[in-house]
Length: 144
Image (tube, rainbow, N blue to C red; front, side, top):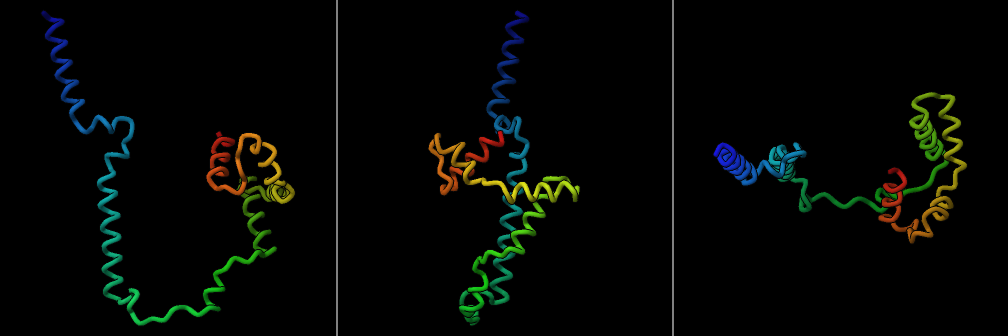
C-alpha cells in the first residue's frame, strides 16, 4: 500500500510538472527571459518610430536624396593601407598582443592561400568557395 501511494504521489507531481510551461525551460534559462527581451525590443522600436515621426525624418520630410558623388563614396575600393592595417590587427589578435609574434602571424596570413586550401580540402565533398552557406558550414566543421 505504501508503494502504491508513493507511485500515485509521484505520478501526480509528474503530471503537474509536465503540464506546466516550465517543462520546456529546463536546461535553457534564456527562455525565462524571452518575454522581457521581446518587451524591451518592442518598446525600443516603438520609441524610435515615435521619435522619427516627431522629428519629421520620414520619407516625406522634404529632404532630398543624396547626390551620386555622396553615394559613390560608399562603394568599396581596395586599399593597400587598409589591407595592411587589417592584417596587423588580425596578427595582433592571433598573437595575443605580442608585437613580435604579431608581425610573424600577419606575414603568415598574408602568404597563406586560403582559397586554394579550401578547394583542396573541401571541393571533394561538394563545397563551393563562392557559396556563402558552404563557406560557413566548412568553417563550422573545421572549427569543430
